[in-house]
Picture: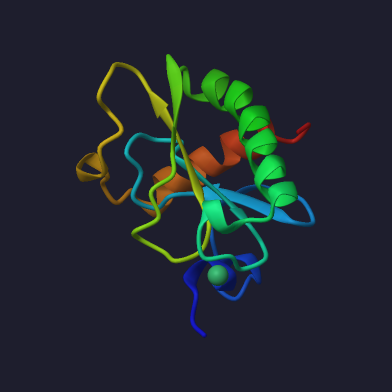
Length: 132
Ligand SMILES: [Zn+2]
């Protein structure tokens, strides 16, 4: 089975990783709605967030909550938007998107970022998230 996020979780495909523990991984969306747009996934394949076991579901939202504060600080965002949609990749994921005004959580605003910009943001967030 070819699942993009499983391959990223297994390090078969490189990603702009910003945080991980044994069971979860956070990395930059390469087509961010705004810079610092993070995807948080469980490493174990599950088709979508609402199919996760209660335990993993609780944990992923706890981690999302922990990420919000340093993400907001690092990006100077007014709010961090949280989106669960799941049409793109059939592996549970949560979008955490720095937002500055209302109505920014629109996938049509997503634009592919350059590797240089992603690398720069990765460095900032790795540093911001190192104590999570
Ligand atoms: Zn998967």
